[in-house]
Amino acid sequence: MNEEIAKNILKSNTSIVGIVCKDGIVMGADRRTTAGGSLVMSKNTQKIRSINEYIIASYTGNSSDIAMTNRIIAAELRLKELRDKDRPTVEEAANFLGMITYRNIRQPSMIASVVGTLLAGFNEDGSTELYTIEPA
Image (cartoon, rainbow, N blue to C red; front, side, top):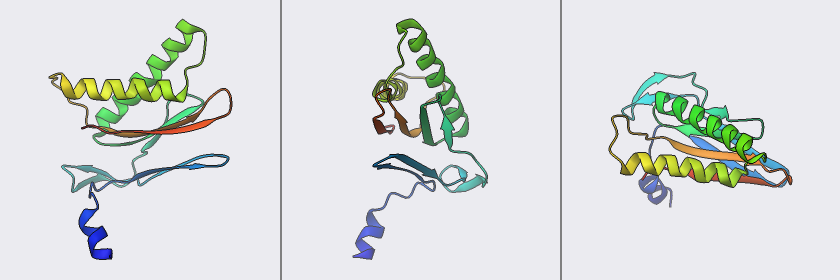
């Protein structure tokens, strides 16, 4: 059984995890940054980042893409909040991040985004949500 599992595990050389619990969400990540999948660039990278006071994200991928993605989603959610005078839900944030990710894949760009993301947070009603957005 272990051999079968080992054959089918995707080896990305980086790990992020999110677990939905009764009272919230637990996020975790390793601290290793790689280049080309196997070359370790750093062993002290912060992969879990705050987007705003109620949404966090955990990322895999290129460090510069991660930083840019985090800045863009934080700015766009703040603009939406100011425009609508209402706090965006976690689902709206995940949908927006998914749109950005898939748009970058389908439209030719000088800088392709290859960031995998777990996005988690809590809504105004106290409910918690966890989403995964992966490049195709």
